[in-house]
Image: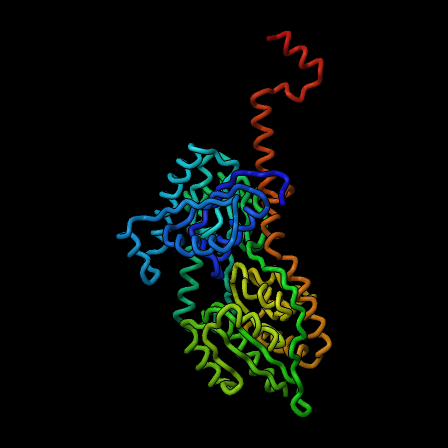
Length: 447
């Protein structure tokens, strides 16, 4: 509980309880800010209302209120199939600013934070309220290394190229630059996104991941792999959307090498997405189809229980800004093998997994490094056991209260901005407030 209670406006386009990704992040930040003792006014979309009101029936949060805003129903058709979502989002931000300005006029806020969508390319206008403004955490500046894109299908390579162009163009977008200029602090999810920020705005930018986990108290003993004859065994799992940039082209090739080296390795692929056919065809080509189990999406509770059945999460994503599944698996005692790219590389360390380098390496070199890392896990069960314990310890450093507290606790960066703004206002109202007694006497004589 914070000793300082602030009235904060939280702008979250995506905010929905019981969901992962951006909607879940929006909801959890709102809840944790209220639990820290602040009065939080959450500005979000009207279509999130039903889920939010159902959740509020089961939890008492006296320090939180919601303002719902959406564009007219005819405009929502633009979002079908995701084609017009970016235009819809921009227009929503414009309308949301006017709603926020009216709310601020009626009952002023101490600060405002724009949280979701947490993408650098998509601007917020909340800095125009003229109060301390926290932008982010924002991501999207991450890119897949050019050498590793050669494993992509041609269409996916073209999509990555378009994304690169979009990132370059948006650095010069006047609305984006206005947001970066008006923000008192810009929070970036990864060093890659921090590097995307134009140089003139980096002095008030820093890195902070926006995702968190709940404290896990269940220290149930995991089911360790057994050897088959003299062959070490390893049970791997991938969880997430089946998208080419998630890097499982590399993961599947590493699995094939692992099996060639005499490791009885299996892989469970949990999720769905457009890359499934491509990955299944690659598995057949590599002659590892029999070692892979394809599982549709699981309910969250079942997934949490399933983590204990595996030895490691294989997550070789090429440009994830965050990595919710990485934190989830670690909180349930599952080590992670990832690449040194994006959010996962900010979470995983030698205490809880393996981070495989990619800088200056070819596809074959990265695949070989992945395979060798997995081979070490298979051949050293004592190391796996140590990593399991380390994964839980590391995950607890991202407990929700801790993550949100880095911005809104008594010593958080957002709270510090409010204190600084109040001090500036006080000194502007009375320039002699901190002067020595003789100076105050001189002031009285002058007046």
